Amino acid sequence: MSNFAYERLHHNLQVMKLDTIDSILDNFLEIAAKDGKSTIEILDYLIDQEMKNKEAQSLAMRTRIAGFPSQKRLGDFDFEFQPSLDKAVIRDLTSLRFIKNCENVVFLGPPGVGKTHLAIALGLEAVISGFRVHFTNAATLIERLVDANKQDRLEQKIKGLSKFQLLIVDEIGYLPFTSDGAHAFFQLISRFYETRSIIFTSNKSYGEWGEIFRDHVIASAVLDRILHHCTTINIKGDSYRLKERRKHGLITQNR
Image (cartoon, rainbow, N blue to C red; front, top):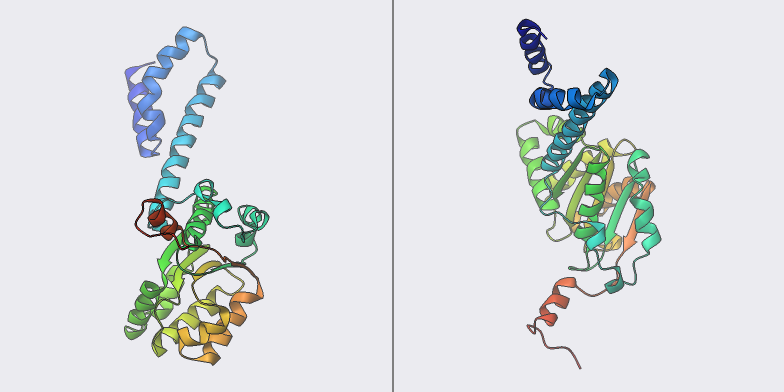
């Protein structure tokens, strides 16, 4: 290989941002020459390594953009501690058909039963499968929607959130919405209806959502859209956090 061809090859690899091939090319060509590898074998290996590296980078970026507060996997979830959960339903959700079908998932239950864990775990499965995901706390989401509305940028904000194929809204019900927040949230739900998927976690039953929105009419309209294509999982069990505190002797067992 002439120096001109060698330099042009590396230059073109850099221009095309084939950084992995650029970094391993020289060393691998030496190994390939010793092993007598064919041109097809060389190209196949180099392109395969480039693809694997780009996929890893893409996964890392999607995970970072998702904004998960922690890394929770389904394999780490203690189903035996929550016997009310149907493993078959959770397993079906991991197929991610609900995202492809623009359906919603709602995890209901008291604090500490694993709602957020399951929501994050499904979100991670979605990220790994190539979906664009965004995790947000309900109070934070409402605050940002209200701020955007005050600046006449609500449409732009909702459009930005619509870039995600799955939105995870955590902890609906811990804080009530303001009137402006309820109306902004309704507009978001209306935009996502039958076009995107949302996973919700809430410590309130659906009958109590009117209190969250401080408006039963808006709550009814929101629930109508959420529940039209939705899987509801009601977790009735003890708190994992209390379990750990009892384990370490911080809480005395009831007798």
